[in-house]
Image (cartoon, rainbow over all chains, first blue to last red; front, side):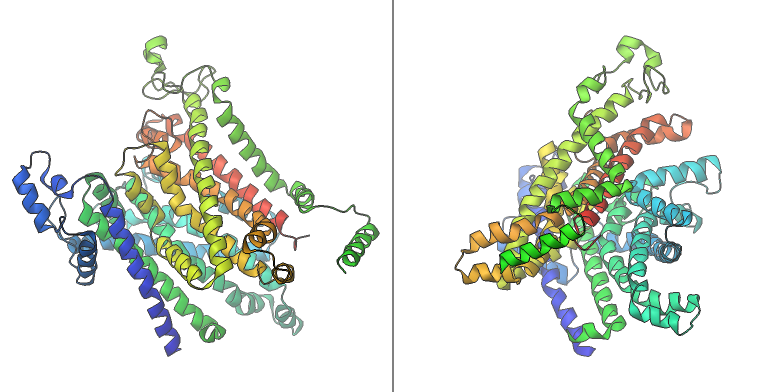
Length: 308
Length: 304
């Protein structure tokens, strides 16, 4: 197991180096002079020249790239053009909101997704099964922000159960609707996946054996079928992280939550390049780490993988 | 030996009382039995027809502000015979804008998908066929690009250049080629080890001919499935972009932008501005998802 972990860790280094490279390219090829953006329209040429020198913008591109790698490693990505906050401060300051939102959404998605998937698979071709499948399809086909708008309309405007959008004073109630909104898409995917893998596993010989030796259905389903059906579900959790972070941008916009998603959109609108770099980089690294963890958990679930 | 095999297969089919059939005919036969897939196909066809024939389906112009001709009542008018989906704040007919929105959606999704399929097939078959360093490099690139939240990645590209349709679909295709490339790579990897390819190679057939004549035809089916499902995803992405205010700019009628413009009026009871474009998105994406799922089942020879 030890060498497996080390191999996987080393394997993610080229990806991380690539991620940093892409972020650098993305924020370097864009038209417009960062020094001018920083100084605004009225900056005089002399000052702009000084700032360009200070920011290293006159250096050859490979030196700039090298400096960028150095900045990433030392976690010193500079300061926001807007409010002079360091990028690390800005990102870490917004992180708790987004982390709460994303983790909550994923927990909802996994619990309800797996349960509904099991129910659907064990009640195949019944009305309930069709109902769950139709809902799952709608969940995949409906824009996140529209789900959000409908939930706000229903629970805030009409029923008044939830005070409104925004974060209030950070009470948990403000997180309920955003978590559901963000969770619906992964939930729908997990329902479909759980159902189909369960159906595949149910027809395997060892399940027939388990039934033949007289185990009650509940034990067969939860102990023999589910355990093996869950491996693809674990994969999808890892792969869904990136899509979840895209959903975060939309969810935070609909609910006016001060998280990383809104920070990134604001930074793009303001052309606040250090912040853009910081957030994009951070989100990509979260994805790499999430998938690393999923890979490692595989080795845990299925011993064969460790020796491949 | 080959002829013998064929004869055997044929006689077996004759025993079953079925005519010999091609992959396509077989797929169509299976698709016809799948009601959900047919429903999806219907939605997709409807979407394409609406997009193509937009000007014939409505007498209004998508950016025509009817307050100048019909007076102030044409502002935020609820659905009626004259305006089945109502009008927006500027007195524009929403049905007309939804219809023309289909056009924008189709233009962007088809273009983005065409580019994605092209890049995906080239990259995927290079990686799968040559393996080694080429595969390592392409797989690395895919792993790197997959790490970014795709929406933020696209925003970071479209936001800094003058907005245009071309920019939007190019940026989207920078993300979606990877799904195609992965499918193609996997497929090529498994096909190139099969006996008929090795036989061709033993006979001295060139790499190019093996690729185009023997391998790529076997890649088409999974690419069609991935492409159909991807169309839904791209339409969703395009709408999300305009919802956030990036991508095609107003007054161009885009579904995402319409939802964003109409969202503030939902709670006032003026729901039609935001809801109809949302229904258009849901039905279109649903159509591509159902149709894509159906195609996957139909094109899989193991399914009977």
